[in-house]
Image (cartoon, rainbow, N blue to C red):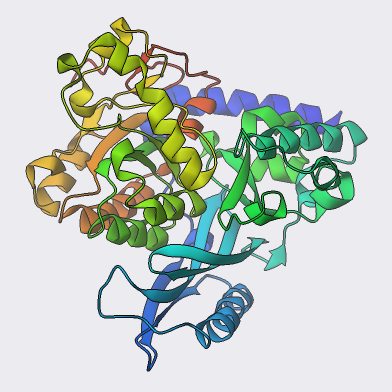
Length: 450
């Protein structure tokens, strides 16, 4: 009874905070402050080791996370094959530390070692940790979920659905799937907590031979709220503490600027949504894989960047199959929604292409080549709870703009979500041939002041 009383009063508190408006949103807590930087080391054979290291509010956490990363840099970096001068024929290992916050004290880390050769991902290993940053105590899934056996059965069903969604034309080994869905395996699964989701992480090679990417199984907090312990409820109740928004990037990937944007997001601990042009996926498969494996949402920006009004309805209806074939080849799963180049969605809806269409409520105009200072001035004046922010990861100023924007938003009470999280927080299901501009308490309409 005590648990459900807490649930009731927490729900009341959420409603009160939302009613009072953005003034109640809290700045990032001291427990969540992380400095995340990297150093590059060039071996004698011109291969490169990039090692990320963190400074956190807890010395023990800092030591453990950095120790894992350093050990992998030494292990994976010593045997890299020689690289050529041509940047497309690289040889490198990137040991990354991705972090994400929830509540006031909990912080998740995902340490990844990604080995690439000639821009092909050849090996990936990873591990996760979640801590109470006040005490340094490690948080496990058994601290998040109650003891009810039905809870673990429900989680197993979600894991089965999530894992079999990858490479839909390939049948994974049934026994391996079953083993991963048993309670004892779930309790030991790698996981991270985010603004509005718990994500379980699995190596693709565990089920699909020859695949080196990651498989992510996502549970949005509203789905699992009633299965949580009281402490986990409190530390995942982010709508009581923060405003939310989604940072999105169009027109990529770009071999020059997309990696810099990803580094800015790694540094700041933010997740984003990348609307990728389909006919660029094959050439930049390694970047699309990196976006997915680093926890960002990957969506469609049509097959090409042309004006859809100049395409026939039949050609438009063929687009999802072309985009998804490229996406499944790269990351194993199809896209869930689309942003039409230029926001020109009417021909797509008329042709009944079948995607949900994600517009935006705050245009940074970085596509005009605006300086970071000009973009920040716009964001500071216009940002509202539930906004979808439009950026472009192909532009030269966007990496620095991204870094400054995330820092500003965090200090001013915002938690950045993926598009999926932004709508899931209010229980909004993205429907085919429907247009969405934002998500503020379930309102997805165009802002009247833009």
